[in-house]
Length: 370
Image (cartoon, rainbow, N blue to C red; front, side, top):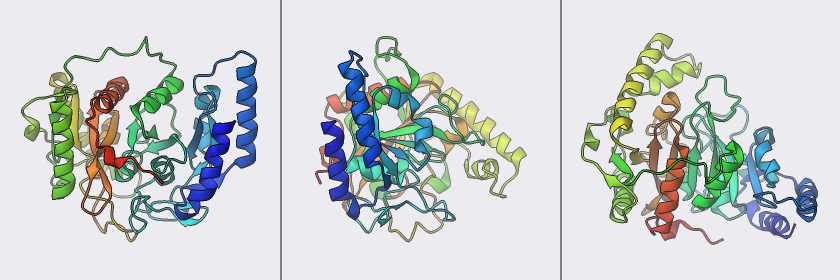
């Protein structure tokens, strides 16, 4: 109960300047926390007893059943884009526009905007998200936290296109692992054995012209990969420059039903990229890239540029992907490095994130203290 009360007090004090929550469920959260305390008093040991969490959007509780069963206490609905707004809109909370906690004049990314901000600002240790083109990974990268997108289809999703998958945003890898165990029922003992060494290929742009990153996000991602290699978390293989996917944009837009693109061509692109990725993961455990080609931009938007250029290929293919903090740019905002694994290998991504933390390979300057 005390932990939930502290979270609610912090939200009331800090969130007016961030607008990371669309709704705060103070009364319901207190009742749920008391119910969890009663479960514990009766001898039950929920693994996440009393952990305050945010859920993405006003309908986020629909997908949070396993987390509630594990003892989590939802304290509110995090901000998502407002109705009728462009997909390049970042979040609308109870106090207006959701802002990046590192710089209020910059976007936190979307569409899991509020979840990323709430976690980065320390309002909650964990918030749920959903990722249809990068909607967990992009805001996690731009707010300096860890974000995980599950393998498409592995966890329930209301998205009828099959492009979106559930995910989570956290500050610490152990919290992402706890989320995964709660959502899947997989215990630590029954989890996947992590290969030693974990082999990886680094690609700056996936061979996609439109995905070519700006110099600074690329340099920070390269430095993050070098730290992972130097600390022994991964072993880099040569040949990353040979990673070449077809641009997923036409296929993604056609499958999303935007009226753009041809479904036959979408199928061809998807099959071609699946073959190339199958070949890649036959020789390496991980594919590493910058999470985004650009840093967090202003609230007016990125213009015609797609911040999703390096993420949405893996919504099309269904591969699990995570983003880890890569460092802080000259503008004072974080960027990320993306890790992609073969389908069904979320536990490998989580193990690498944990190993990176333990080895000190993640930048310490992305831990906010508000």
